[in-house]
Image (cartoon, rainbow, N blue to C red):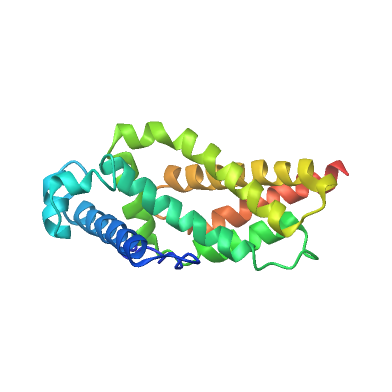
Length: 207
């Protein structure tokens, strides 16, 4: 798992106070991820994260509610980078193809070791596992909103919503297939490509 989060771009009109708060939040999250990897999720306390990040425990709660929030912050940041790439896609490209290409490129950046670390971290906390359905629902809506920014015709919104739904479904299936593998694991990007290829084949056979 990368210990450095994607850096958010400075918002237009962002003042010094807002920039410092954003940078502090990112520093806390990166510190938490590093400690989770080194000591395990349960073996890392909030006090340790705060001390390593150079803040007080009270200040920690000004940025995050819990350790779970640090992991969710990392996951949100990585999905946000996918949406940023999607916004650069030409509207002449088919939406499903665009989502597939961007997600494949993004997933190929992770090594097997990084994916194993992500999987181990997520499975180490029952509370994190319980949050996954709501997290995926949130990403489905965010993906739909991003698609509507690129393909702006109102009459396409229903179809774009379906693209968002099936794309998140493909991600979930690929992730589950990766988790179910034995010691000889295929890269998650390969499984994601299989999921999208199967989806596209079914759509074509139905048309």
